[in-house]
Image 1: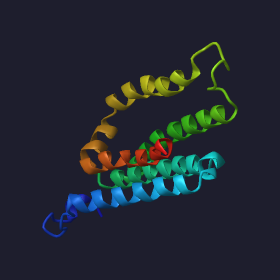
Image 2: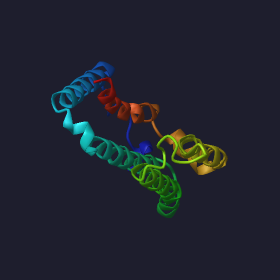
Image 3: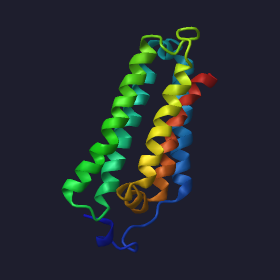
Amino acid sequence: MNADTVSAAVMAPRPAWLSLMWIVAFTTLWTWLVYALPALPESGFPALGVRLMAHGLIALGLWIGLESTAFTPRQRQATWLAVMVPFTLWAAVTWTAAINGAFRTGASSLPLLPAAMLLPVIVAAPVLLLSKRVGQLLDAMPMTWLIALQLYRVFGSQWLV
């Protein structure tokens, strides 16, 4: 099913305040949980869970967005792999480097943390901006998805506690 087969009159829009209420409730619950169980952040479980959940939601959202384009199934698969394989490799390399202490102060004479954050953006942004398929994908995705992607920042509340 693609977006052209469903009329806008068939799907009732969900009020924005309802989504905001869920986000506020979830943020409150997460902050309370981190505050009530101080050993939880030290265990590394929240960081692992957040990373895996964000990665999975990005992969799922990318696939669902690709389904709303006019691409053939092989084009969807190729586009999904072209985005997710480098993204997964970057996540795995940086996560491994972090576990091994590569980003600690004084671990290297090179600024590895800024390089790990900026180098993928510097390399990938021109490639993605020149891609017609990525442009069509972004045109097909609802703008709310791109905004909702930032929901994972709620998990940053553990550092406020």
